[in-house]
Image 1: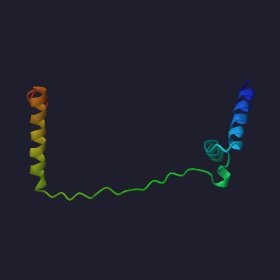
Image 2: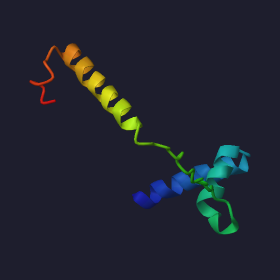
Image 3: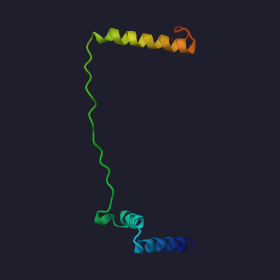
Image 4: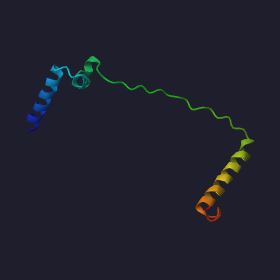
Length: 86
């Protein structure tokens, strides 16, 4: 039964190829003609992350930003920062 279905599908594909259906042609090339170079290739380009320059004076600024965020979150959630575990 499976062979019959496979034969029907293959026959329909070959018929579409004979009719010049470009999608069927591309599908056949990608699946049956890989050895001839009909493959898709995905290129990945490695991008280095930007370098961060942090100096010791930034610590106080970062600490204040964290504190502001904690208190802002506490106001939104109506929870005192101490009760929230901060």
